[in-house]
Image (cartoon, rainbow, N blue to C red):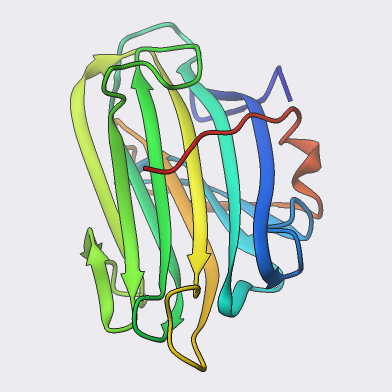
Amino acid sequence: GATGCVIDGLTFYNFGWTPTGSHSSPAGGLPDTEVDVTTLLNSNGVGFLLTPTVAWGAGGAGYTDGELTFIVKTTSGASTLNHIYQQIDGTVAGTGSYDDVLEQYCVGGTSLPPCGPPTPQLDSRIGPTGCNVGAADGSGGCDNSVSFGGVSSIAVLKDIRGDATAGASGANVTITGVINQFGPAVPEPGTYLLSFIGLGLLFLGRRRFSRS
C-alpha cells in the first residue's frame, strides 16, 4: 500500500497492479492473487521475487499481461541506490512468441514515469530459442541490469508479459518467476520468504503505461 514495507534499509511503497490480456490463464491477464513474494538480499541488491503458484501463461493467439508500479527509496535518505537488476523465467514455444519484462524507471524520482523525454527503459526477453534481450540467467530465462550515479529513490513502472499472439499453431508461453532488485549489493545472508496469497495486500491502487 502507500506505506509499503522495509527490506534491509530500502522502503518499497505506493504499489499498484493492473492485470490485462486476452486468452490468458486465467482469463483477463496476470492475476494479483496466489503469488508468493520472496524478499532477496544478495550481490544483485535488495528486492523481491514474484512466483505465481500456478504459472502465468497463454496459448496461441493470446497474451497475458500485468503492470506493476512502485517506488523504492533509502530509509536513511542517503543517495546510495546505484543500479537496477531484473530477471524473468519461463517457457516459450512458437515463432514470434516471447516472455518479457519491460521496466520504465525514473532515477531519483518519487513520481511514477514518464519522467523524460525519454524515460529510461530496461528490458529482458525470452524467445523460443532462449534469451533474446539481456543475458541468459542460467535458469532458462533472462536477466538485465543498469547502473547510474547514486540516488535516494527510484520510481518504477514494470510491464510483465507473456505473448503467443505471433506464434504458429501450438504456440504457448508461461512465466514462472520475476525478480526486481536495487543496489548497492549486500552481503548474501540468503533469501527470506514472505508468502502473500493475494498481492492485493501490497498492490493497492492502479496505474497504467503503454508498451513501446
